[in-house]
Each structure stands twice: as structure tokens, then as C-alpha cells.
Image (cartoon, rainbow, N blue to C red; front, side, top):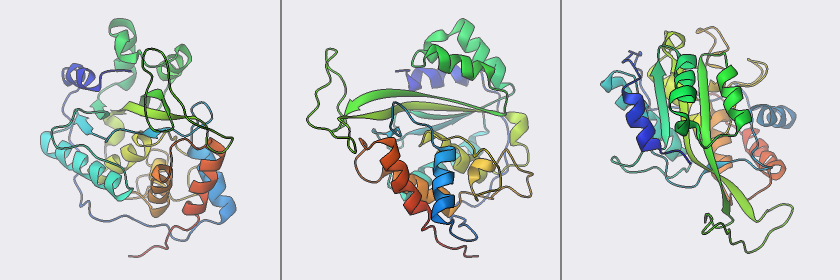
Length: 277
């Protein structure tokens, strides 16, 4: 598991302050119409990334930290992130909590990853060699990695190399995948024209859940398409479909199998409310 606090201190010397347009952060944009059950299932399967047959989520309270933005914009972005998490029923840490969800703005994300790989490999210690290779090969404007640990059904971790479990089934395995920390790196050039609210909402859906942008942009209204569409077509903030995804992911026990959990999430996504001005 990587130390998010230590990593944040390291990155403070790497990130150059950038500016971002601020925007009100008090509403959630809803979808024009709820997706059909088939569309909802396709959307959930398209954006969800499994970890050992399950969908990982934070077990500890989430503590966001923004690095590389002007101070005022960073505080707005962190506040928006906290609000989105709370509305989804996710526990959020206090104002002076240890950061475990980092949003980093740099001139060159690829250069940062290469510097970490060659000079500070410990910050990538929670990743497999395959995950590190994928991270180094990433070519988009956003890069993300997460530290995930194995816990039992009650959220307890290993002690002395032993993980105590009580019960389990095909539907509810004996263990669950917990996100211990996550880092999202934005290339500054890609954020031009984006608001703080858009960036915070995008980061929330990427960091609070192990997700990726949908394969085909525009099929479903989602903030995950922020960097895949023209600025005029991208959602101005998180949609009700996005919010329903997060709510359903964090509802109920965390030791559900990925297939069962995806079906639960899809049912909630299909009930996303219609758009209200």
C-alpha cells in the first residue's frame, strides 16, 4: 500500500500551479431520459473495472487532496468532491484527514510517471508489473492508479499474513477488494476550458470507483466522457446516471461478486430521474 500523505508531499514539489474556471457546485445534472435496462447494463459493464472478480470501493473515509491548482480553485474542487461523495452515501474524512484520493495537475503526466518509475519506484509499489506497464504506456490526458487490498467480509485486513473469514457463497464471497488510495493525474493542457466542477466530478467517478470512460462516447450521458467529447457536448457536471452508479456501488455489503454487483448497479442506473432544468 502506498503512503498517500508521503506521496502528496513528494508531488507538491512536482506540480506547477495551474488555473481552472470555477463554477457553482450545488446541483447534479440529470440524464435527458433514463436508460433502458439493456442500456444501463451495457453502460455499467463498459465503465466498470473488476478486481479479482469484484468491484472495489473505499472502506475507510475518503480524504481528497488537490495538488497543482491555485489554492482557491483547489479548495473548491476538494469541497465539490466531498459533496459528491457524501450525496452517494460515502464516508468522508475530517478537514485535517490524511489524504487518500489525490487529484494532481502537472504539465506532463507521462514525464511524471517516468520519473516515479525510474527515481521513486516505491510510490508505485502497490501496482503489479502489468499495471505499471499499462500506466507507462497510457497516452491520454489523464492517468490513474490505485492501491487495492484484500479484506474479509467485515472490512478487516490481514494480520500476520492471515485473513480471518467467517462465511461466503457465490453471491457473497468471503473477501472484498478495498481501495486504500488512488491518484488521478491531469495534464494541464487538457483541462483548458473545463470548470473546476467538471474536473471534480470526473475525478470523483474515477477515484471513488474503479471506472474508465465508456468505449463509445455519447451513448450514455456521463461525466466520464469529459475528455472524449467537444467542450460544448461534454456534461457540465455529474449526471444522475453517474450519481446512481456511485450510490449503488456503495450500498450494501462490499463482498458481492462483480456480476451480482453490476446487476444491482444497472437496476439503479435504469431508474435515474429525468432531467430537470
